[in-house]
Length: 273
Figure 1 (spheres, rainbow, N blue to C red):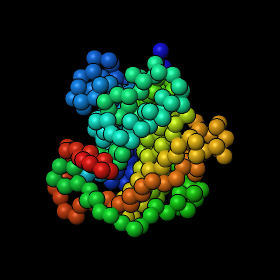
Figure 2 (figure 1 turned 45 degrees about the horizontal axis):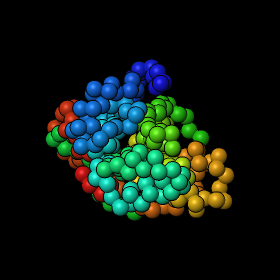
Figure 3 (figure 1 turned 30 degrees about the vertical axis):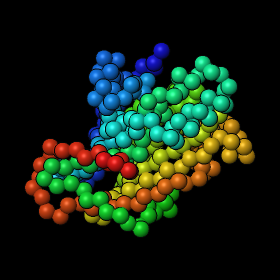
Figure 4 (figure 1 turned 135 degrees about the horizontal axis):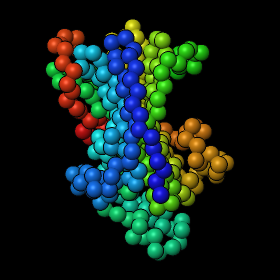
């Protein structure tokens, strides 16, 4: 039985930015089936929050938002060799043939996504450019008043009680900046742990945001030196997971535009759009 989630919506103004966080109920089964068909997936995560969203929008229309539907568009809906190998290893770790049909499916049954957000803007939008500039983590460690904080769960699936796959996003706003962490966390019991983190940071006096995407992964067999109790703690286990990929980008603000609050959407995945 799924837990009951209380619906809420919170808005916060940060200079020219409107920050909105909406949390509501799990998507109903009929709606989930229709969306699964649209995405060419056999099924969606068992807890799919289709109306949950975190939106960061400038008063001139451009911005970025995070939602579950666009995140699932970045999931590989064709089975690849890595997924097959993982499924076979999972099966071998249990040595139980009845798990075969449960694991080997013609799509990425882990719902791994390299989603980095959906860009907003009609007449103009944020311009994504590579950069060598990194988010200053020391500034984030500074003791500064937190004016607004929200965490939104986008989807979660317990992989038939053999692990967890989840995507969540949280934001905190300080007097001089805001910081967002979008985290995909995957644990397949006995097989692997994977984390795809997207960090977004904006200082009020800058005409851009910094976005850092980091993908980490390790087989469970390589984590024998780590207490198993940490396997369920993303913040604790991350330091033990080797980095597989890092992408640093600037999201530059458009220079000239006409104000237009309605937004067209551009989903940002790492390897495909």
